[in-house]
Image 1 (cartoon, one colour):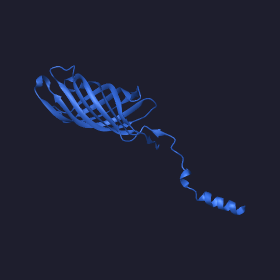
Image 2 (cartoon, one colour):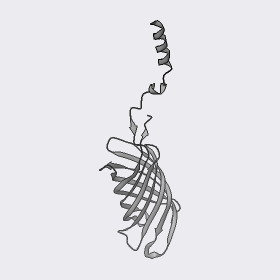
Image 3 (tube, helix red, strand yellow):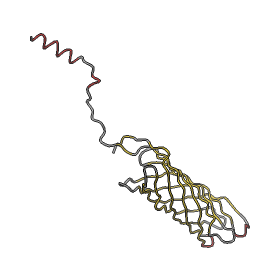
Image 4 (cartoon, helix red, strand yellow):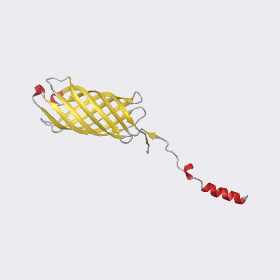
Length: 186
């Protein structure tokens, strides 16, 4: 009998180890990688002539890790203009999301090009633009988010008549095109 017990113990020790799990599974899964596209309406205060101009914008958010990503945006401010004065910006930069339950506040820093058309079409130019800002996204459906507010401060350091700044707010809707999960490590 003792010999049978020793053989059974040896066979048990040599059995496939793949059935035994020595590590626990992670306790949480983060949002992971995602790609979102969106569009909305913006209102900006431009220093040149202290003008309030508005227009449409589009953006793409690509999160490579669950909080860190890149945002690219294009904005055409051509409403509420006088004398055919308008500004367009095309910016890209890093974005950091602070996930808080149902709200997703974020901060961003961007660089790119701004195109400005002067009154009466007297001239137009393309300028380097640096911008910083932040906002809040709120999920309203499984793949749809409402960009409740996005605030952005822009500096046009090489503007024709000296450095120009603009400050604006916008709102809109974004749709998640891709959403993959990743393991949370913090």
